Image (tube, rainbow, N blue to C red; front, side, top):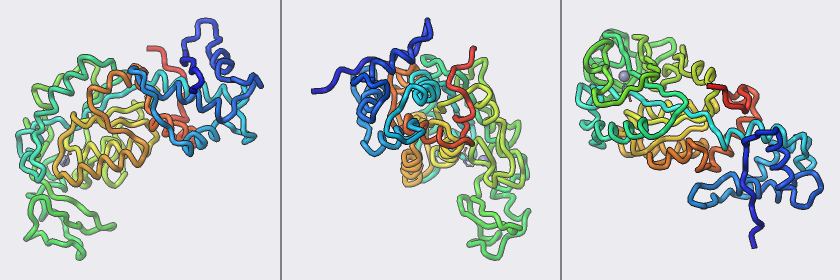
Length: 357
Ligand code: VGL
Ligand code: ZN
């Protein structure tokens, strides 16, 4: 029979929630938590509001336990539990959530790089309704809109292909290059570049956010791809990591723990952004039905990569419960525990308490 699992309550009117939690789960009363007792905490944490308890593989439970059992004696004592409570449990129950809406711009929906002309033939406009719906019903702590924002002489445009010398190793030369081909421009170092139709030129109609996308008052716009010499798929950095946008600095300033990513194109800028979010250390959630992409195989690969890096892929109707801390995913708990081992992680550098709004 299952042991009864007390709920985790982090609200702390008289400063006793942490001690109450420790005591409630210290079933044998020896004033320390063994792996079995810690497992019960995980059963209380990783569940949804429909009463479903998510399975956490034993190996993962062990790995998480070891993060908090800092003296490796096989027990989490009250001192060790402080860190676990403040940095892990509090974040899981009350994350700080950013919503990142990637490149929902005219050119990708009905303009020069209309993704419905790509092999997957997906329609970009279909994401407008579920994204707007999320903006209506979910209270994110910060909302970002990225814009692909290229100068006229941008390296990715097919009609600029003769502006820069090609490397000898390029699989196609400038005369025969076609849209969507990948070429290699001369270095140093040589640079791979996929060629796109001219798109999202700064201040053009094609670069505007789609008119039916809801733009909230406190939304923050992030412009990328502004350097003519280097493309930028990720909203964090350009493809050569030469320079970053202000996104990460703004996320850190807000104490962000969780990033919800959606937009266009799934397998290009959305995917690159989600993978970078995970690499910086954020708990990262891809909202599948709020993305459309160019190539089925590449879209599948994007999802697999996010999942293998301990992110999750969800439907937009799951987002609200997650934001409100009612639906708590073990993959994200695992991700956070692993990040807390790494002092360089964005999540190690924040404290566990939500900033006062
Ligand atoms: C994008 C191709 C070229 C995107 C941007 O936003 O996904 N794709 N530039
Ligand atoms: Zn672009």
